[in-house]
Image (tube, rainbow, N blue to C red; front, side):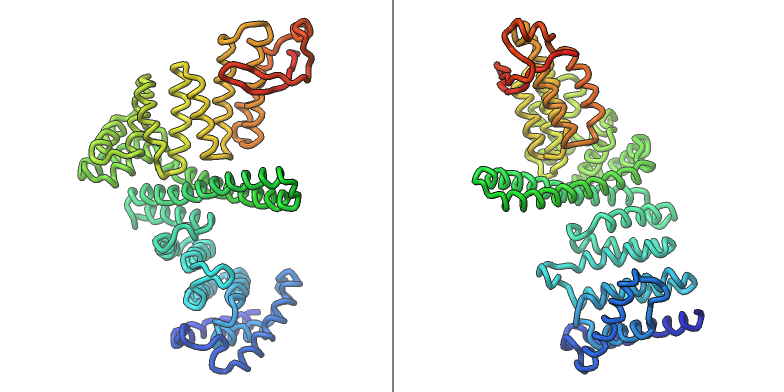
Length: 484
């Protein structure tokens, strides 16, 4: 096995000098000797299929496959992207089976990814640029195979983000943040780098979630239209697209949650305020810094600090914007100046940050709820739900508004009917957002205790299970239920 490993290593390492001597952008698809390249391509692919069919078992790997693959890579790398994706699998096997030589294989893997970026800067299937994605994968693989090479992975991933952050998959973002933390923990970057990268990556994830949420709304509307016209095939197709889109939303939210968790040890209010206070003292009119301070302190719920208030006011003074308005709104809300806070949250809804817009509408709903403007509060909550169709909290807010409205009605049934529609909203909230299920169930347990009795329903000429429209500002149809 040692002899075989050494021979394979020698074959693979020969790639470095050979590839660097070629002009990959001008040579033909199959290289100078197309017959030889096509022949080797056929040989390695046949062996690869056999290895794949054997579920990549160690005993099924072939030296002939590796040799033929190497020949294709050296003489005609532009022949197929499979040369690179298959090569990645081959190197993965060699790295895992030869731990003592893994760094040499990792170096070769880096050459493989660099060459792919040169030969296939755009995806042949979509026509879209994929260089940032390839470099992101390169950084991920380096970090995955050897975390001691975190600095190299960090620099590769940093460059990938600079190229195009929208191309990066969740795993690349996760690896970049972990490598950033390693850089800081080993004294190669200052602590502020973690904060900067955290904001950069969460902005990318927020942007992804916003784009996917907008697509979700469009798909749901298109599905509804197809259902109205009776086009069952289209409905089925839209259901698949909606399911795929929701999966993408959940993946981005999961990565964001993981990044938040990784950031937590570096994100105590005390630490953040200490770091940011020093930075703000150095450059008090640095708008980019003020935005970073207010955004992160808000996300980490450090808004009670004097620093947050000072930075918010300074930012609003220097550059009135939806983001600055949001931060002032937070302070006014904490001071129970709900009408003033509402004015700022209204301005904040013009933000380009999807998460900020969602929270602005949500907080606006709270403001109107506190001053008894239930209709406006519901409108704001509905807008929040439109911004993020996967969030259940807006429906819980509406449930609270309905439950609080009983005093606006008269009659044994009318005053209790608000709890039916309130529970309806709680049920919807937990159906679309499992993270609020506990809160929703608690509210359902409380509200259902206020249902009218069987006798009250009967003596008012109604029946359980019957449809009922709650009037007034609510104006929603529900189902009659009795208390148990």
